[in-house]
Image (cartoon, rainbow, N blue to C red; front, side, top):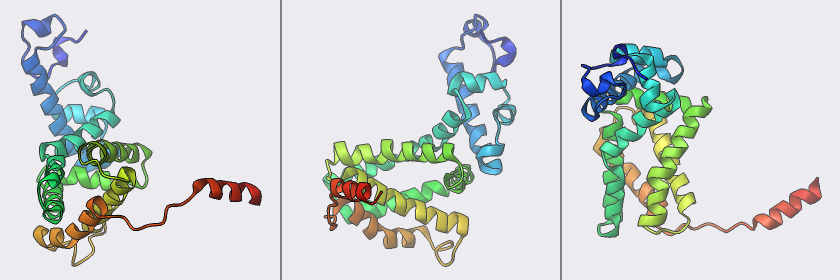
Length: 230
């Protein structure tokens, strides 16, 4: 049971019994999420501890665990919420009625605008930096990619090779973010967002909507060859 000192906000009758009201719970969660965005951005995933995040949010660390379970789950919530708020998946859904190239270009532009929003950019860069070296962050990114993109391509858009398309699509976005925000390679690092979107849009469109010209591999034959070599 939570004590009054655990609250980030004023205590009402319901919270005195140990259970926060719905309104106060939403306020507390919002404060923690905002604090997490700032701390993950400034300190990176490893150094942004639950205690530091709670301190910025003005609440007891136990409440962070109460609402989000673990630091991994909190970080995942921060990143996924950022892109859910921008409804990027909704942009791709319009491909059923619209022009695929226009849809892919719009997606690229909104993806970059979201990644560069104040209060979001630092946390997103922390995600990109950590993917190659932190297994927790890699798992979080893959979960996001599969839940937000692959589910859309396979169920809503009903595209073939959904897993392959999602992987290619994600590799393009990840490579773009790494080049623009981490490596900061020019001219891509300072190029206006609409220009970058126009350049990358055709590639995203090809990966998601065009016929993929590749030769299917017979994995059974490969497995048999490997077994013979051993």
